[in-house]
Image 1 (cartoon, rainbow, N blue to C red):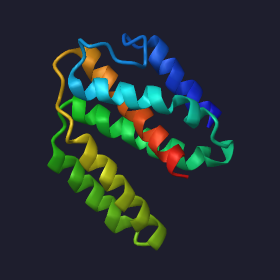
Image 2 (image 1 turned 45 degrees about the horizontal axis):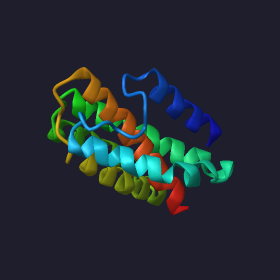
Image 3 (image 1 turned 180 degrees about the horizontal axis):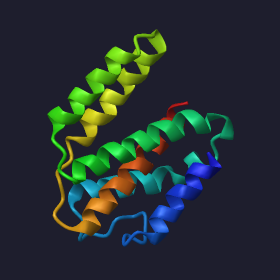
Image 4 (image 1 turned 180 degrees about the vertical axis):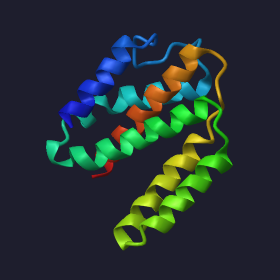
Length: 139
């Protein structure tokens, strides 16, 4: 957990969006993510390190999916790759894991592809942090 929080903070500090609370010049969706992150930050920091692996994996997946979304990778291409992966791991654990990832995938593709490089980076970083907080607070 601490490793992931350090990674998140490093991304937020080095990223052009210097504050978690997204300024009003950002698109509405990013402002909403910033408000959620800001409101859950203290609670997420106090979660036990025992949950680090599960939430880190899910957060990294969210980061990768949003990054692909912001690069304009087509939904059907990613969905096809996920179905191939689904067929390669037919265990119950593998199927459950993929089902939870499909939710992240579908949610990420509800966000628009932003024009500016700054907004694209902010979307990716904020979405990863948002999913990490959601995961930690659900445990």
